[in-house]
Image (cartoon, rainbow, N blue to C red; front, side, top):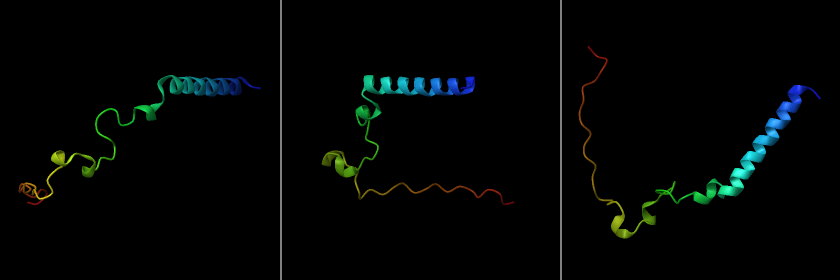
Length: 71
């Protein structure tokens, strides 16, 4: 077995071990999903009725700006 193969195997096994230990000690990234801030896929129907955005409101009109690239 060459030195390159030994180093490759040691780095792979070491990285896997470190990742597995970090995952098991911390509960993994999925354990904290949704605990900080809003959910990734938030729907207005998930909020209480008083906090939902109004569907009848109109957005402000877009401001006019001059065209660029024409002389």
